[in-house]
Image (cartoon, rainbow, N blue to C red; front, side, top):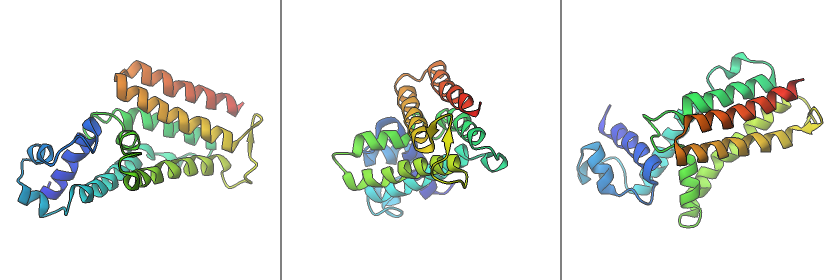
Length: 194
């Protein structure tokens, strides 16, 4: 791994644990075992690093969460796979995100103090909601109904359930709690199938 990638990777971990605002350049330099010159050779500022860390976090999110979705045709089964991936492959990824979901950390921390950075994070949340809705619509009309519930309603339930599970796991690091939260969403979706 070259120095730039090392800085991004170590910053990803630090931001996940401590947040962007509470992680100093010195913390990053120490974790990446480099100097200020090494840092500024690759990044014009800490904010420049933020955008590159955010891009890397998005790549990891896609890699972990979208695995196998293309192989599934049924919308409910596709979202169930996404939820299992989210729990087992993403939220439990302590190598990259030892503090939990970095997007939740950024959203909570940056909303008031750095709204321009928070808006970048919000794009990912908007994209996730859009993806869930698209899966549920599955090329059908926007009036697709599952046991009397619209795709819009189910999208909101799943999206907020995912974020809630992520927040809880970030706080208590309880696999049992995470398993219970995600399995509740999966049980809910399984009932919509009938």
